[in-house]
Image (cartoon, rainbow, N blue to C red):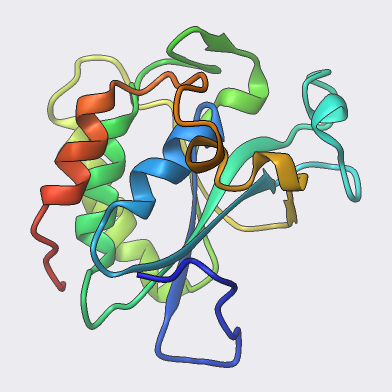
Length: 182
């Protein structure tokens, strides 16, 4: 499976932007799922232009560390990807995942296609039924996305023993998951 840049003109692929805490582990997790064509880490839905990691960490830019997931809907559906997303996050935790805290570590599903909203809302309702607290997952249209610095891209591939808030068993789970098409 190749994770090179995908030709944006290729309309057979779809995109979703997922914030789930530190983007290193979230990216690596989604890379394991069959049908995911590419992943890219960056900063979504903030108020400045071209933020740096250092700026995002100040809690003043309103950006969330986010993974741009491009997928082949003929191989994996959005519903399945979102179900996998909820296995990788604590959906009721506000501005915290694992040991990481701050607004940049909030959870969120950012969409670019209005047609995806019904699926997103359905999966969120289903997930909410498992909790007495309200979900802390933002569901918003993507306002902006800036690619993170090169050293953040494919971080856990480049640094296999690097920091990750996700348990290693989750990556194996994602590799073995049998994708469904919605």
